[in-house]
Image (tube, rainbow, N blue to C red):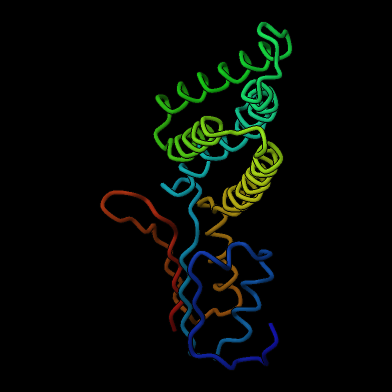
Length: 212
């Protein structure tokens, strides 16, 4: 940190510092606090409702992005839909039929996953978006539709990266105790309190407080 030793009375972080390198970030936090400084950190818990939702959404994201998912199936079928609506695709074309079946199978799987999921919002949103886009597809709009599908893939990849980062940095009991030990070692005259944070029965994270 770009600060001298012992310059702050209070050091706080909410769902942030756990993404930094451990234990270096906590050693730095200790260094910049004054002798009587207080510290308060709220950090991701590996078994919190946020982490559980993230694990399920990571599975949805992975499936939506895979070759058997609806995005790839939509990319395969939209050129045939555009041709059909322009009147240039002969009935019974093998390629068109294969693309149609692939898309229908992907959408059927999406509906099944929605029913089975406790957090189906992403799946529902993607399914509705694809349905609207394909239902209104006109031949001249094919390039923009394909671009939109590629943009959706990019958005999903970015979201998957963020989901993975949360899961990678959610702390186990051992992790948070190791952090507490950093302060116990660096500041032997302080009290360190670690507790779980919950709201309406839902586990949200870890709270770690260091007080003189």
